[in-house]
Image 1 (spheres, rainbow, N blue to C red):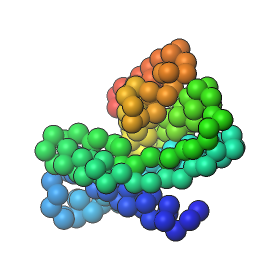
Image 2 (image 1 turned 30 degrees about the vertical axis):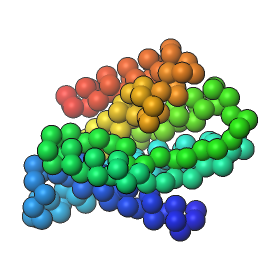
Image 3 (image 1 turned 90 degrees about the vertical axis):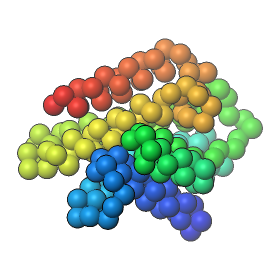
Image 4 (image 1 turned 90 degrees about the horizontal axis):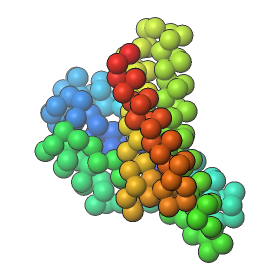
Length: 191
């Protein structure tokens, strides 16, 4: 991984972790609670975000395309401003940019789908760890919820999100994946 791509990923992870922390804690004040919550979210959001984007990148490269992650400055600002003003995280701090003139609608749909599926897999792993090690339950529930949210959010079928490419490729796959992620988020919050 190039240093430039790594710096874009790190900036995005820190910013989105701060945004989620603001929503969880309810303030931007640098308190002990803020620091503890930020650390937990940096690990859970960071892992989910990085693996989500690397899944896009790696599958695109498997299809012979050029792919690299770049942060989106406006998206980073929107994430922070919305977290502070509305209590909601607009989770689009950047994207894996892909170029391959040979990529079909199906391949682009699969490249888009692999990110939310990665979040779903991570959510399941977090829940499993929480059942195996009950002392980590609050951390693993947070990890599960964050990853299900990231996956479900990314399945919204609008241009800048993964859901648009999945929807354009296969509406049934889009509907099923979206349902599983949203239903999983509902279940995870009720456990």
